[in-house]
Length: 335
Length: 289
Image 1 (tube, rainbow over the protein chains, first blue to last red):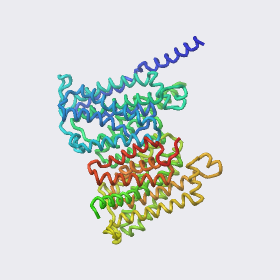
Image 2: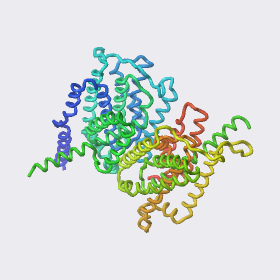
Image 3: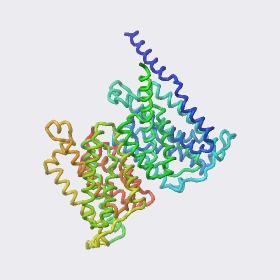
C-alpha cells in the first residue's frame, strides 16, 4: 500500500511540474507587446488600454475559466480599484502610483472576499443576479455620494507622481505602456503559478464536478472564496491602472457593459487557458478601435454576431480554433 | 386629503402601474426559464422589438390594434428563433446561453438603431388615454389606470389558463419535473415552443405599453432586462404567483425609493433583491434544488 501511494504522489507531482514548465511559445505575446512598443510609438495610449483589458480578462479567467463561476458583475472590482486610486489622488493627496496599486488590490480583494463569502454558496441564475446586483449597488452608492465620486461626470484631471520618483509620464504614453506591461507580467506570473498549483487543480475539479469535490472532502466554498478574492484583487489592479493611465475615472466603470465586455473578450479568446485573455482582449480592442470609428452601430451588430457564431461553432474561442488548426496541420504533414 | 396620505396613494398607484408592466414582460420569461432552465438575456430585445413595431404601426392604426398586432408579429417571429437557435443550446451551460442571448440582444439593439435612430421615440395616444381620470376622492393619470386594467385582465386570463386548462396543467407538470412529464406522454418540446411564443408576445405587448412611461430607445433591450431578470429570480422560476408577487414588491419599492429618496435612485430595488435571494435563493415560490 505505502509504495503504491508514494508512486501515485510522485506521478501527480510530475504532472504538475510538467505543466509548470514554460513552453517557448509562451514568449510570443510578450515579444509582440515589446515589438509594438517600437513599431507603433504613437499608439501607446491605446496599447496601454489593450494591456489593461488583458489583465481584466485574465482576472475573470481565474474565476470563470478555472473555477467555473459565471458572474455578470466583475466590473465591480475593476471599479473599486479604479476609484481607490482616483479618490486617493483627488481627495486625499495620494499621488504615488505603485503604492496606489497595492491599495487598490487590497480594497477590491476585501470587497471580493466579503461579497464572495456570501454569494458563492449560490449557483446558476441566482448567482448571476446577485453578482449583477452587487455591481449596480456599488454604482448607485457612488452616485449617492457624487460629492465624493464626481458621479457620472467623474473625477477628471488626476495627477500622479513619476514612477519611483524618476520616470515621468510623456505625452505619448510610452512610460505608461511599459509600466502596464511590467505590472501585467508580474500579475500573469502569479496567475500562472496559481492555476498550475494543486489549488488550481482543485478549482478545475470544482468546475468539472462540484459534487465529487464535495464527496472527496475538498473545502469547496473556501477554495471558491479564495480564488474570487484573488481575481477581485487583480481586477482592482487593472482598474487602478485604468485610472492612472487615463488620469480620470467616472462611475461608468461599474456599468453592466463593462462586465459584459470583459466576458466577451474572454469567451472570444478562449476560457481556462490563460493566453485566451491575451488574444481575446487584443482582438476585441483592435476591432473595436477600427470598426467603431467606421460605424458604432455596425460594430455592435458585428460583436453580437461574433458571439452567436462563437457559441454555435467555435466553442473554445479563437485560441481553441488556432490550436485545433495547428494540430490538424501537424497531422497532415505526417504521412 | 393630508399630504403624506396623498403621497402614499401616488406611490401605490404608480408602483402598481409599474408592477403591471414588469409582470406582463417577465411572466413569459419566468415560465420559459422554469420549463427549460434557459437563461434568456434576449427577452428584453423582444420587448424592444414590440415597442418599435408599435411605433411603426401607430402611423397607420390606432394604439390598441397596433399593440395587438405587434404582439402577434413578435410572437410568431420568436418561434423562428426558438426553433432555429435556442433549441440547440437547451443542454448547454449557463455561460453559453448567456453569451448567445447577449449576442442576439446586441444585434437587436444595432438593428433598431439602424432603422429608428438612437433618439427616444413616443407614440400618439387616443383622447381617452390622455389627461386624468377622476375616481371620486382624487384623480389619476388615465394612461397608468389603463395599464393597471390591462395588467389585471391579463393576470385573470393567465391565471385561468395556468390553473384551469389542460395545457396549463401540462405546463405546471413540466416545470415541476420535466422527465416525469415527458414519460407520461406530455410533449414538452411543443409546450415550450408554445410558451416561448406567448411569453415573447407578452413581452412585446409590455414593450409597447411602456413607451408612454419611459420612452423607447434601442438601449431598452438591456436597460430594463436586469429588472425583468430580477423579477423572475425573486419570484421563483416558472411560478405565476411568484412573478406577480415579485413584480408588485419590486415595482412599489422602486417607485417609493424614487419618490422619497430621489438621489438613491435604483438602490432600493437591488437591496431588496439581494436580501430576498440571500434568504430564499430560489425566490418566493421557486423550488429549492
